[in-house]
Each structure stands twice: as C-alpha cells, then as structure tokens.
Length: 303
Image 1 (cartoon, rainbow, N blue to C red):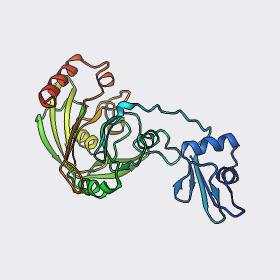
Image 2: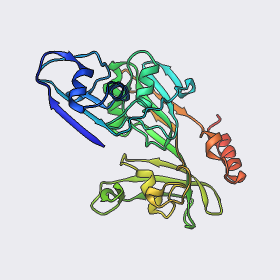
Image 3: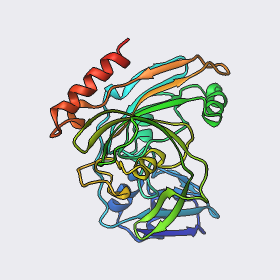
C-alpha cells in the first residue's frame, strides 16, 4: 500500500486538484480514490472533491494500484430496530465494521451512515467475519450513557459459534486466561499468555456432532479476538478460523445473537436477540447441527 502526504503550499484550490499534485494520479483515479475514502485533509477523510484547500493544510492519501471499487448494496433488513435514540443493526459476515486506511465505502458503519438519515454513533465493533447485533446511538445526548455501559461491562453480549476439535471436556466452563498480543509474519495475533490482560469467557457446548460443536460464548471482558483465542486455547478453534489454527473453510462461524443492557442515563433498558443467518451457517454442514440449533433456539430464545 502506498502512502503519500504533503503540506500544500499554493493558492486555494479544489481538493481533487491538490490530490493530483500529491499523488500524480490521473483525474479518473483521483475521483475513485476520493470516493473510496483513501484521501485525507489533515487527520480526517475528505470525500468532497470540490472542497477548497488552503495553503498550509496537510493533504495525504493511502491507495493501492490498480484502484478498484465494488459497491456493497445496503439491505433494509440490517436495521433491526430504530427508536428511542438507539439503532440496533445486524452486521453481516464479510463486511468490516469500520474501513481501512485506504477505503471505507464497504464498511458497515459507513453503509449505515450513507443510507440512514440523521446521526449514528459507533460504540463497539465486530470482526469482519463475525455477524450479528450491534448497538449504535441516534441521539448524541445518549453517547455518554451508552459509552459508560460499555466501559463498565454492563452491555452483556452472547455469541453462537461453530467450533472444531476432538477435545472432551465439560459442556459448560469459564475460561479465565489472560490474553496478549504477539507479532507474527501474518500480522498481530493474540494468544493466551501470562503477561496478557485479564480475559474471562463463559463457554457452553449446546450440541456436538463428531468434531463439530455448536457453542454459546459469553465474553465477560472485552479483549480483541477474545472468543476466538479462548476457544483455540481449549483446543476448539472456530471452524474456518485459519488465523487461530482452525480447519480450512470459506469463513469462520461467530455470531452475536444477543445484546442486553440495563437502564442508563437517558437510556431505556434493552434486550435484543437475533438468530444466525441460516442460509450461510448450515449450508453443507450436517443436518443434525441445524436441528439442534432450531431446538435450542425454540427453548431458549422464542419466548
């Protein structure tokens, strides 16, 4: 990825014109760069090619050639609830919560802002291949209250996962194992290590079929990749999670099916549940897994 920047010195001019000086790209490439979200004015992305840039401003860009942009369609069913100053949305697997340095047009948060009118505030994230419920604010007056709930671990999250392994252990256990970061050739990876930060996850095995396990996981702390790391630590990595030694598959299977929070400052209490995306979760997998999931959902979540 290429990164270029300069302090603009010259007469006030359009952002796209200044970008051409910084990057040397063609006008059509500049248009695409701006639309993708890889162009910055100071610390912030700028998507207005006609914005006037004055002398002394820093202009920068992140990009990879050839520039390509594949728009992501917005689906109305992503909006689970939009009321009382809160937005509950269902993030699909395969879409990042936020963009990269060179592009944000395909990010879930950006897609929500582009397609829903009014303010949307971001308070937490899901990994790109994780699906499920996310909580956003629609009223700035609620930001402090929602931020406090997340900070104080009062937003309770529950996930469903498909794990793989032969480990024979308890059907229900609490994993209390510190997690820290380590540098690898493939990037930053997280692992259980004595020097890591406290990490606690409640694990419950719902159903097993050979080496496949349908698991409920409740993170009681908020470490990066916590569920993925703790399941791998147990010898039960997510199906498809190659980064943590899971068996090869087209994706990994992790879904935030429940968000629950108490009443807070200007904030009503909430409890939302969302089933897994059945058309992608169980395709090609044993039918017994889907039947076990259906029965568990009926008994646990249908009331």
